[in-house]
Length: 359
Image 1 (cartoon, rainbow, N blue to C red):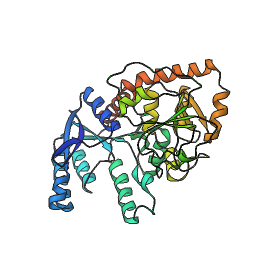
Image 2: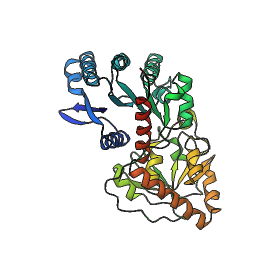
Image 3: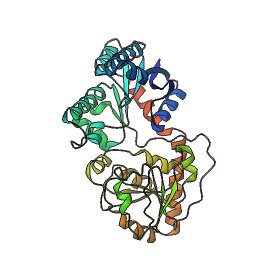
Image 4: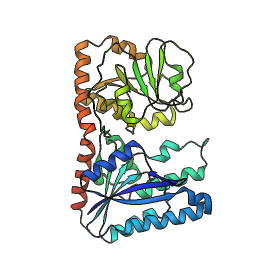
Protein backbone atom coordinates (compact mmCIF):
# COMPACT_ATOMS: atom_id res chain seq x y z
CA UNK A 1 0.00 0.00 0.00
CA UNK A 2 1.00 3.60 -0.65
CA UNK A 3 -0.08 6.23 1.88
CA UNK A 4 0.20 9.98 2.33
CA UNK A 5 0.01 11.92 5.58
CA UNK A 6 -2.97 14.31 5.66
CA UNK A 7 -2.44 16.90 8.37
CA UNK A 8 -5.61 18.49 9.71
CA UNK A 9 -6.30 20.95 12.50
CA UNK A 10 -9.17 21.61 14.85
CA UNK A 11 -9.49 25.29 15.62
CA UNK A 12 -12.52 26.54 17.56
CA UNK A 13 -14.34 23.29 16.73
CA UNK A 14 -13.71 23.73 12.99
CA UNK A 15 -11.82 20.95 11.22
CA UNK A 16 -9.80 21.97 8.19
CA UNK A 17 -6.85 20.89 6.07
CA UNK A 18 -3.61 22.12 7.61
CA UNK A 19 -1.87 23.43 4.55
CA UNK A 20 -1.62 25.65 1.53
CA UNK A 21 -2.79 25.09 -2.02
CA UNK A 22 0.59 23.56 -2.85
CA UNK A 23 0.15 20.88 -0.18
CA UNK A 24 -3.49 20.26 -1.04
CA UNK A 25 -2.57 19.81 -4.71
CA UNK A 26 0.11 17.25 -3.80
CA UNK A 27 -2.41 15.31 -1.68
CA UNK A 28 -4.97 15.33 -4.50
CA UNK A 29 -2.46 14.14 -7.09
CA UNK A 30 -1.17 11.41 -4.76
CA UNK A 31 -4.69 10.16 -4.10
CA UNK A 32 -5.40 9.99 -7.83
CA UNK A 33 -2.26 7.85 -8.13
CA UNK A 34 -3.64 5.38 -5.60
CA UNK A 35 -2.16 6.71 -2.35
CA UNK A 36 -4.49 6.44 0.66
CA UNK A 37 -4.66 9.20 3.30
CA UNK A 38 -3.59 8.74 6.89
CA UNK A 39 -4.85 11.60 9.01
CA UNK A 40 -2.81 13.32 11.71
CA UNK A 41 -4.76 15.87 13.72
CA UNK A 42 -3.68 18.87 15.74
CA UNK A 43 -6.26 20.21 18.16
CA UNK A 44 -5.74 23.90 18.96
CA UNK A 45 -8.61 23.80 21.44
CA UNK A 46 -6.75 21.15 23.45
CA UNK A 47 -3.73 23.43 23.51
CA UNK A 48 -5.85 26.31 24.78
CA UNK A 49 -7.68 24.20 27.37
CA UNK A 50 -4.94 21.92 28.70
CA UNK A 51 -1.71 23.60 27.67
CA UNK A 52 0.98 23.25 25.04
CA UNK A 53 2.73 20.21 26.56
CA UNK A 54 -0.51 18.22 26.75
CA UNK A 55 -1.32 19.08 23.14
CA UNK A 56 2.22 18.13 22.09
CA UNK A 57 1.98 14.78 23.87
CA UNK A 58 -1.33 14.08 22.14
CA UNK A 59 0.18 15.02 18.78
CA UNK A 60 3.11 12.67 19.40
CA UNK A 61 0.67 9.85 20.13
CA UNK A 62 -1.32 10.68 16.97
CA UNK A 63 1.83 10.59 14.83
CA UNK A 64 2.85 7.27 16.36
CA UNK A 65 -0.59 5.74 15.64
CA UNK A 66 -0.59 7.12 12.10
CA UNK A 67 2.83 5.77 11.17
CA UNK A 68 2.07 2.42 12.84
CA UNK A 69 -0.34 1.79 9.95
CA UNK A 70 2.59 1.64 7.52
CA UNK A 71 3.86 -1.91 7.44
CA UNK A 72 6.37 -4.03 5.58
CA UNK A 73 6.36 -3.26 1.87
CA UNK A 74 4.28 -0.08 2.34
CA UNK A 75 5.35 3.46 1.44
CA UNK A 76 4.29 6.73 3.05
CA UNK A 77 4.54 10.20 1.50
CA UNK A 78 5.28 13.04 3.91
CA UNK A 79 5.27 16.69 2.89
CA UNK A 80 7.94 18.69 4.68
CA UNK A 81 8.03 20.80 6.76
CA UNK A 82 5.30 19.31 8.89
CA UNK A 83 2.72 21.80 10.07
CA UNK A 84 3.05 20.62 13.67
CA UNK A 85 5.26 17.84 14.93
CA UNK A 86 6.97 16.54 18.04
CA UNK A 87 10.72 15.96 18.13
CA UNK A 88 10.10 12.20 18.12
CA UNK A 89 9.08 11.98 14.46
CA UNK A 90 12.56 10.98 13.14
CA UNK A 91 12.64 8.07 15.60
CA UNK A 92 9.15 7.01 14.52
CA UNK A 93 10.24 7.04 10.87
CA UNK A 94 13.29 4.92 11.64
CA UNK A 95 11.09 2.34 13.41
CA UNK A 96 8.81 2.30 10.37
CA UNK A 97 11.81 1.61 8.13
CA UNK A 98 13.10 -1.16 10.41
CA UNK A 99 9.85 -3.04 9.93
CA UNK A 100 10.17 -2.74 6.15
CA UNK A 101 8.25 0.44 5.36
CA UNK A 102 9.56 3.19 3.08
CA UNK A 103 9.42 6.99 3.36
CA UNK A 104 9.14 9.56 0.58
CA UNK A 105 9.83 13.14 1.69
CA UNK A 106 8.55 15.91 -0.60
CA UNK A 107 10.05 19.27 0.32
CA UNK A 108 8.11 22.53 0.27
CA UNK A 109 10.53 24.59 2.34
CA UNK A 110 13.82 24.30 4.19
CA UNK A 111 12.83 26.39 7.15
CA UNK A 112 16.12 27.10 8.85
CA UNK A 113 17.35 28.96 5.74
CA UNK A 114 14.09 30.81 5.32
CA UNK A 115 13.78 31.65 9.04
CA UNK A 116 17.42 32.05 10.12
CA UNK A 117 17.27 35.68 11.18
CA UNK A 118 18.54 36.21 14.70
CA UNK A 119 16.70 39.51 14.95
CA UNK A 120 13.43 37.59 14.65
CA UNK A 121 14.21 34.22 16.19
CA UNK A 122 16.27 33.05 19.13
CA UNK A 123 19.37 30.96 18.51
CA UNK A 124 17.61 28.09 20.29
CA UNK A 125 14.66 28.29 17.86
CA UNK A 126 17.00 28.39 14.85
CA UNK A 127 18.90 25.37 16.19
CA UNK A 128 15.63 23.47 16.73
CA UNK A 129 14.42 24.19 13.18
CA UNK A 130 17.81 23.22 11.73
CA UNK A 131 17.71 19.92 13.65
CA UNK A 132 14.20 19.21 12.34
CA UNK A 133 15.25 19.96 8.76
CA UNK A 134 18.29 17.70 8.95
CA UNK A 135 16.83 14.82 10.92
CA UNK A 136 13.53 14.41 9.09
CA UNK A 137 14.71 15.04 5.52
CA UNK A 138 17.58 12.57 5.95
CA UNK A 139 15.02 9.90 6.94
CA UNK A 140 13.66 9.83 3.41
CA UNK A 141 14.27 6.71 1.35
CA UNK A 142 13.49 9.07 -1.53
CA UNK A 143 13.61 12.88 -1.27
CA UNK A 144 11.82 15.06 -3.81
CA UNK A 145 13.56 18.45 -3.96
CA UNK A 146 12.56 21.54 -5.94
CA UNK A 147 15.43 21.54 -8.42
CA UNK A 148 19.06 20.54 -8.96
CA UNK A 149 20.38 23.49 -6.96
CA UNK A 150 18.35 22.46 -3.94
CA UNK A 151 19.59 18.89 -4.45
CA UNK A 152 23.16 20.17 -4.29
CA UNK A 153 22.37 22.06 -1.08
CA UNK A 154 20.76 18.97 0.46
CA UNK A 155 23.80 16.89 -0.46
CA UNK A 156 25.80 19.31 1.69
CA UNK A 157 23.38 18.53 4.54
CA UNK A 158 24.22 14.84 4.22
CA UNK A 159 21.32 13.67 2.06
CA UNK A 160 22.59 11.00 -0.33
CA UNK A 161 22.58 12.08 -3.97
CA UNK A 162 21.19 8.74 -5.15
CA UNK A 163 18.08 9.27 -2.99
CA UNK A 164 17.12 12.65 -4.49
CA UNK A 165 14.71 13.51 -7.29
CA UNK A 166 14.11 16.93 -8.87
CA UNK A 167 10.49 18.06 -9.05
CA UNK A 168 11.53 20.89 -11.44
CA UNK A 169 8.37 22.95 -10.76
CA UNK A 170 5.32 22.71 -8.50
CA UNK A 171 2.06 21.80 -10.20
CA UNK A 172 -0.94 24.11 -9.82
CA UNK A 173 -4.26 22.33 -10.17
CA UNK A 174 -7.19 24.28 -11.62
CA UNK A 175 -10.57 22.58 -11.30
CA UNK A 176 -12.69 25.00 -13.32
CA UNK A 177 -10.42 25.92 -16.18
CA UNK A 178 -12.17 28.41 -18.46
CA UNK A 179 -9.35 28.90 -20.93
CA UNK A 180 -6.56 31.42 -21.20
CA UNK A 181 -6.83 35.18 -20.75
CA UNK A 182 -5.78 37.17 -23.81
CA UNK A 183 -2.32 38.73 -23.30
CA UNK A 184 -0.69 41.82 -24.75
CA UNK A 185 3.03 42.60 -24.51
CA UNK A 186 2.21 46.26 -23.85
CA UNK A 187 0.17 45.50 -20.72
CA UNK A 188 1.49 46.04 -17.16
CA UNK A 189 3.69 43.50 -15.38
CA UNK A 190 1.84 41.48 -12.72
CA UNK A 191 2.95 41.08 -9.10
CA UNK A 192 0.84 38.61 -7.11
CA UNK A 193 1.10 37.43 -3.52
CA UNK A 194 1.60 38.83 -0.04
CA UNK A 195 2.04 42.61 -0.40
CA UNK A 196 2.92 43.45 3.19
CA UNK A 197 5.71 46.01 3.28
CA UNK A 198 7.91 43.98 5.65
CA UNK A 199 7.56 40.93 3.37
CA UNK A 200 8.13 42.51 -0.05
CA UNK A 201 9.76 45.88 0.50
CA UNK A 202 10.76 46.14 -3.15
CA UNK A 203 7.10 46.64 -4.13
CA UNK A 204 7.21 50.07 -2.48
CA UNK A 205 10.18 51.25 -4.54
CA UNK A 206 9.19 49.99 -8.00
CA UNK A 207 10.60 52.10 -10.88
CA UNK A 208 8.41 54.72 -12.50
CA UNK A 209 9.29 53.58 -16.04
CA UNK A 210 7.05 50.49 -15.95
CA UNK A 211 3.35 49.84 -15.26
CA UNK A 212 2.49 47.19 -12.65
CA UNK A 213 -0.76 45.41 -11.72
CA UNK A 214 -0.77 44.17 -8.12
CA UNK A 215 -2.85 41.31 -6.66
CA UNK A 216 -2.79 40.26 -3.02
CA UNK A 217 -3.39 41.27 0.58
CA UNK A 218 -2.27 44.23 2.69
CA UNK A 219 -1.06 46.60 0.00
CA UNK A 220 -0.37 50.13 1.24
CA UNK A 221 -1.38 52.29 -1.72
CA UNK A 222 0.61 55.52 -1.91
CA UNK A 223 -1.15 56.78 -5.04
CA UNK A 224 1.62 56.25 -7.59
CA UNK A 225 0.16 56.42 -11.10
CA UNK A 226 2.08 53.45 -12.53
CA UNK A 227 1.08 51.09 -9.69
CA UNK A 228 -2.42 49.61 -10.04
CA UNK A 229 -3.78 47.61 -7.10
CA UNK A 230 -6.51 45.26 -8.39
CA UNK A 231 -7.45 43.27 -5.26
CA UNK A 232 -7.15 39.90 -3.52
CA UNK A 233 -8.66 36.64 -4.81
CA UNK A 234 -8.61 32.96 -3.90
CA UNK A 235 -5.86 30.91 -5.62
CA UNK A 236 -7.91 29.41 -8.47
CA UNK A 237 -9.97 32.55 -9.12
CA UNK A 238 -6.75 34.54 -9.38
CA UNK A 239 -5.62 32.56 -12.42
CA UNK A 240 -8.52 34.10 -14.38
CA UNK A 241 -8.31 37.56 -12.84
CA UNK A 242 -4.70 38.41 -13.60
CA UNK A 243 -4.39 40.93 -16.44
CA UNK A 244 -0.93 41.73 -17.74
CA UNK A 245 1.96 40.80 -20.00
CA UNK A 246 4.31 38.99 -17.58
CA UNK A 247 4.28 37.72 -14.00
CA UNK A 248 7.19 38.94 -11.86
CA UNK A 249 8.98 36.62 -9.42
CA UNK A 250 11.08 38.77 -7.07
CA UNK A 251 11.79 39.06 -3.35
CA UNK A 252 13.55 41.20 -0.81
CA UNK A 253 13.76 44.89 0.03
CA UNK A 254 15.19 46.37 -3.16
CA UNK A 255 14.53 46.40 -6.90
CA UNK A 256 18.28 46.25 -7.64
CA UNK A 257 18.67 42.60 -6.61
CA UNK A 258 16.94 39.95 -4.51
CA UNK A 259 18.72 40.63 -1.24
CA UNK A 260 19.04 39.14 2.23
CA UNK A 261 17.62 35.80 3.31
CA UNK A 262 14.89 36.02 0.67
CA UNK A 263 17.45 36.42 -2.08
CA UNK A 264 19.59 33.56 -0.78
CA UNK A 265 16.53 31.35 -0.60
CA UNK A 266 15.51 32.11 -4.19
CA UNK A 267 18.83 30.62 -5.27
CA UNK A 268 17.57 27.14 -4.32
CA UNK A 269 13.78 27.54 -4.04
CA UNK A 270 10.85 27.20 -6.48
CA UNK A 271 8.34 29.90 -5.42
CA UNK A 272 4.74 28.76 -5.74
CA UNK A 273 3.79 32.03 -7.49
CA UNK A 274 6.03 30.91 -10.37
CA UNK A 275 3.59 28.03 -10.87
CA UNK A 276 0.61 30.34 -10.39
CA UNK A 277 1.74 32.52 -13.28
CA UNK A 278 2.58 29.66 -15.63
CA UNK A 279 -0.61 27.76 -14.83
CA UNK A 280 -2.42 30.76 -16.30
CA UNK A 281 -0.32 30.60 -19.47
CA UNK A 282 1.36 33.83 -18.34
CA UNK A 283 5.01 34.41 -19.34
CA UNK A 284 7.33 35.25 -16.44
CA UNK A 285 10.12 37.62 -15.48
CA UNK A 286 12.55 36.29 -12.85
CA UNK A 287 15.76 37.31 -11.12
CA UNK A 288 18.68 35.98 -13.17
CA UNK A 289 20.33 34.40 -10.11
CA UNK A 290 17.21 32.53 -8.97
CA UNK A 291 17.16 28.75 -9.27
CA UNK A 292 14.05 28.97 -11.45
CA UNK A 293 15.97 31.03 -14.02
CA UNK A 294 17.31 27.72 -15.37
CA UNK A 295 13.75 26.51 -16.02
CA UNK A 296 12.79 29.81 -17.68
CA UNK A 297 15.72 29.62 -20.08
CA UNK A 298 15.38 25.94 -20.92
CA UNK A 299 11.64 26.09 -21.56
CA UNK A 300 11.71 29.63 -23.03
CA UNK A 301 8.75 30.82 -20.95
CA UNK A 302 9.96 34.30 -20.05
CA UNK A 303 12.95 36.55 -19.45
CA UNK A 304 15.55 36.98 -16.72
CA UNK A 305 16.83 40.30 -15.36
CA UNK A 306 19.38 41.33 -12.74
CA UNK A 307 17.30 44.33 -11.59
CA UNK A 308 13.69 45.39 -12.06
CA UNK A 309 14.66 48.59 -13.88
CA UNK A 310 15.83 46.39 -16.79
CA UNK A 311 12.30 45.16 -17.48
CA UNK A 312 11.21 48.11 -19.62
CA UNK A 313 14.09 47.79 -22.11
CA UNK A 314 13.87 43.98 -22.17
CA UNK A 315 10.19 44.15 -23.09
CA UNK A 316 10.64 47.06 -25.50
CA UNK A 317 13.30 45.12 -27.42
CA UNK A 318 11.15 41.99 -27.68
CA UNK A 319 9.31 41.45 -30.95
CA UNK A 320 5.65 40.52 -31.02
CA UNK A 321 6.55 37.16 -32.58
CA UNK A 322 9.05 36.43 -29.78
CA UNK A 323 6.44 37.25 -27.18
CA UNK A 324 3.90 34.96 -28.85
CA UNK A 325 6.45 32.14 -28.88
CA UNK A 326 7.11 32.60 -25.15
CA UNK A 327 3.38 32.74 -24.48
CA UNK A 328 2.81 29.52 -26.44
CA UNK A 329 5.53 27.80 -24.39
CA UNK A 330 3.98 29.09 -21.16
CA UNK A 331 0.62 27.62 -22.19
CA UNK A 332 2.29 24.29 -22.95
CA UNK A 333 3.74 24.24 -19.42
CA UNK A 334 0.35 25.35 -18.09
CA UNK A 335 -1.34 22.22 -19.43
CA UNK A 336 1.21 20.11 -17.55
CA UNK A 337 0.80 22.07 -14.31
CA UNK A 338 -2.99 21.97 -14.16
CA UNK A 339 -2.89 18.21 -14.82
CA UNK A 340 -0.33 17.46 -12.08
CA UNK A 341 2.28 16.20 -14.55
CA UNK A 342 5.45 17.13 -12.64
CA UNK A 343 4.28 15.68 -9.32
CA UNK A 344 3.11 12.45 -10.97
CA UNK A 345 6.47 12.02 -12.65
CA UNK A 346 8.43 12.70 -9.45
CA UNK A 347 6.25 10.39 -7.33
CA UNK A 348 6.53 7.62 -9.92
CA UNK A 349 10.33 7.92 -9.83
CA UNK A 350 10.26 7.91 -6.03
CA UNK A 351 8.14 4.75 -5.90
CA UNK A 352 10.44 3.04 -8.37
CA UNK A 353 13.42 4.15 -6.30
CA UNK A 354 12.12 2.81 -2.97
CA UNK A 355 10.84 -0.42 -4.48
CA UNK A 356 14.33 -1.14 -5.81
CA UNK A 357 16.12 -0.50 -2.53
CA UNK A 358 17.46 -3.47 -0.64
CA UNK A 359 16.81 -3.90 3.04
